[in-house]
Length: 398
Image (cartoon, rainbow, N blue to C red):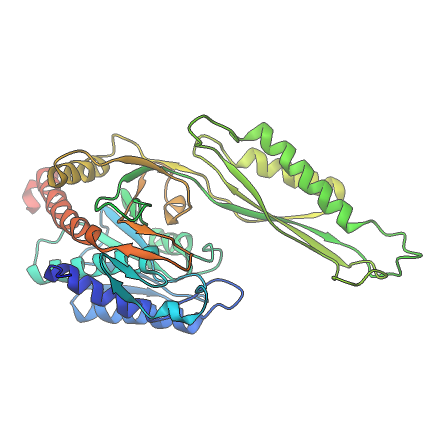
């Protein structure tokens, strides 16, 4: 199938990135390859005259990419260049194009969209000033959960220390989930993703004479208590299925087959994907108090709320107007259930808007190629609209 030159170039960049097995998730993270993917993107941006602030203070890197001379861009585009482990094996890092789809690990989540934004920035830099006030923040540990540096929350804090805080954020994760339509919706609401755990400490002893507390029973009690309290604090059922989701990701205690020795440690993992209507802090405080009462250790690894954009945000309105102009009708609005980096931005300043893909994290992951060019064209027109807005606000600097 013949694709236009822009789409062909995006596909070439995306396939290069897919071939780099930049896995950030257990059980076998490949941090060297995450760095390799980041360094490839950094070199691409710098070779095309863009400015890159490189953050490498942790296990995985991140970068802040701007047009020349920009100090505090109004809009930040968020993306990531890491992936989850392949299914079933490393053959998923061999990209292929079949019909209207690009197959491979990271094709839909989200190396193709990163490639689109990278090409747009490079081409827009070539056109020359004035440049639109849009920057990119790309991280290498989104799939892992961004619990360690340098993820989105750490990078945003580093930028805030420099006085950089955009007015509007766009997470580029796919927003057309069927992989069959060229236009992704604009998700105005997104769920947060909070991860926490209960830890129980015991003493190894002979089960026939041990008097220490039963760690299995303690963790089961914590499981039941968490379920009960979630029903009090959260919307767990709704007709439209826009609900907070509580999952127990793991419970580890004792050793399989070892019956006559009491375990020394146990841990229960809890994940909450909360809608913006359900605040997290009362629930977290409740679990912490419960843990103290029972002599458990409660560890809130990462707590993030859901987000809902302010409909009066002018940069959000400009994005909707741009899509409407190019599409011929307003974009579909949506509520994003899977978590994205947007949960780390101010609660009313961000949306998720991406392309079309199918099967992220699955063996049949693929990206819908016809969704590339509309996204690129919107970026180009949105940049021009932002320049016009800036010109009206600061006529002397036009």
